[in-house]
Length: 261
Image (cartoon, rainbow, N blue to C red):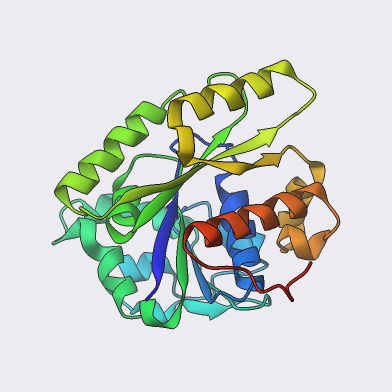
């Protein structure tokens, strides 16, 4: 039975898409069958894996025009598939407002393909929108990336309230999978202070793995590759590999000892 995890923060620039691409790719490399859903109209998750939407996308799925299986494509990377999107997805917000069962469109669509995957990861848009509500309604849990910068926790209270509202109204099983600290510059006192503050606030929900700020993580998407393919010796690769193992470990899955970068 698959598990669906949304990667969510309404603030932009916190490493959400970077995490979606690299976490899913490394979990897949470690032997899990993973489907990555690009639910952001910017389509950066799609292009970040070297993919492009040809005809149909997640937009058509949400509109009920095609099935999810018609959109899912295998990537060039081991065990990893994607349901891509592009700017057309922005129209879904307005068109879904008056739609029947609008909050459940994604959940219904995923039900038909869930059996084919161990994990489904959803890259949410940087807003608390109807698209985000669809993701939360379809998910078992959420990963919240928080940037190690000033005002790191700004807006997180609103996000937690949204999660609680969705849990109460549409999805009682929804929970926080974990909180991920991203873009840490270990040379600054501020970054270390933010780490301490977030751990104080979220306690055991915070992953032990912290993602560093690194140039290579920023370069990889322009080559259409996850970080472990683009530069397997980078600190970004080491960090996301550790995160993948931590996420799998929390779900009772041990990485095969034969696996290595």
